[in-house]
Image (cartoon, rainbow, N blue to C red; front, side, top):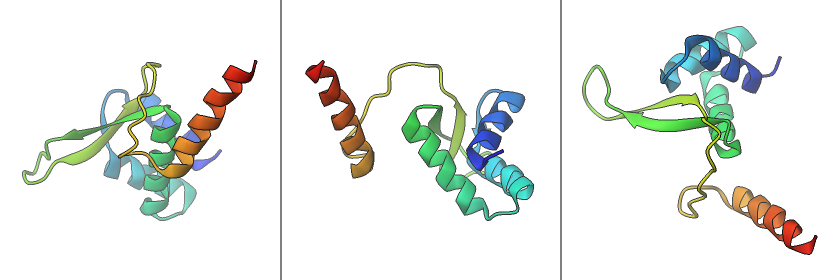
Length: 101
């Protein structure tokens, strides 16, 4: 089982909105890796459209924190200021292939 699969499984089992730190700690204990590795995989899953990211109020006060939930299969809106160049390049290539058909 990969880290990405574990993240998705965790979100399926817990349901709803889950704090990124809670997910990273739980999955890193299973895979014996750093929580930062799990956080990177969560960002990749977000870019793939499998999970969605939200900023929520910190229960302890202070700055907002990141939380994730499973995606609801709505179309992904690509924001050039938010996504990395390799993601935009892949989107451009996939869209251009449709026009060649």
